[in-house]
Length: 501
Image (cartoon, rainbow, N blue to C red; front, side, top):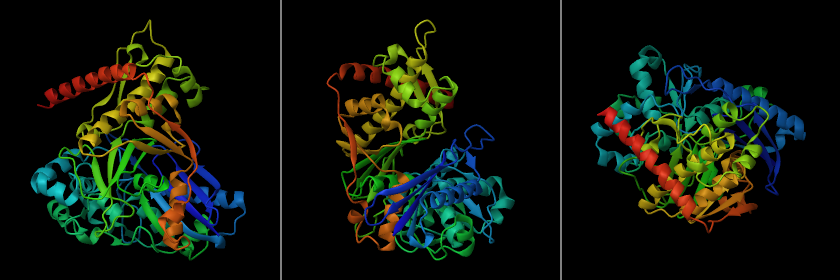
């Protein structure tokens, strides 16, 4: 028996098949081979066509089945992980009405800020654990205000994973975890957040039916089967946003455990057993995959938008065409800590929650034409993202979260020794690199949802530890470099505030 998991990202779609008995990965595919494009009609906007996600899901699935020769009837369940906070809107025929407004789009920041004031800061934080901010609900309000004729045709709203599940099964539904990430869930009322719907003038009829995170969420229909090559009746039985799913994949399920990832965005995700909130909404709390009202598990999420996106820009725009990330790392290793005075603020991928939803943009400081070369740029880019993680980690510490041990997958920026050792040294933590991916985590989650595993512990099994990064003894050089970087950030934030005033 087998399970299949999908990870619907903004850069690519990943699909993985695992064997139930051993839990081992049989095969994995990524589509497309190059990063998917984003539509940016205006500064701060970011959209994608949901149909393109679906086409890549179908292509990846067909290639997996062809590669492995697995009988589709042997696949016992489907799991879906997806980019968080996106908005997909469909009509009553399940046709997409507009491109998805995705996670890094910042057009709704002010809409959310105003709602935060109207609803009341204390009430919002107590009920929603967040400001409405730039999340899915605020993006929907933007559509209502700016595209009223289109808005009037909306039958249901969905998150990206809900859309893929709909394409597979023909059924529209969502989860509590998903609703919480869109700021549609009231943790006090244990129900859809009427305080948000009423403030925004959104009808509750637009919210899909709610299904459990683990369990039968719908079964493959004929259209989905024909498009993917999977069998009619195969259940979709797990769904979660990419960061809760990443935590699941790393077996981060209980209070005190921390997961991190350094993909297009950078995330530190810690689990607590009570509702907590940041009064400045720099970090956010959502229902974790194993959340229940009786036994709450809240994922506290720190997000840095300009992470892998910044380093990817460095590779494509600064590095020679034939230089890959491994060669960039090797070159950067020849540069001393602090990049000889070159510092990069990586916040060039939309409004940053950690900066209170300011769209600061990226900035390069201290560049000297007669001193710095590409290698300095590579190291400064890695350090800039790492320093952003540390800056956010300090906020988590202020909230009482500990980051003694951080678990990460072996498929993103944490492959970089420079990046990982910088974080480990400054946060004084161990970073465990485990052999897993989001798609594999989704497949394992599907196994629990389908009942082929009796518990999440059994589903996750024993994860292989690839390596451990530990704090370095020479902390002074790192702390000096971080202090200069932070000073540059605070100066830019002050300049931004002065202009806004």
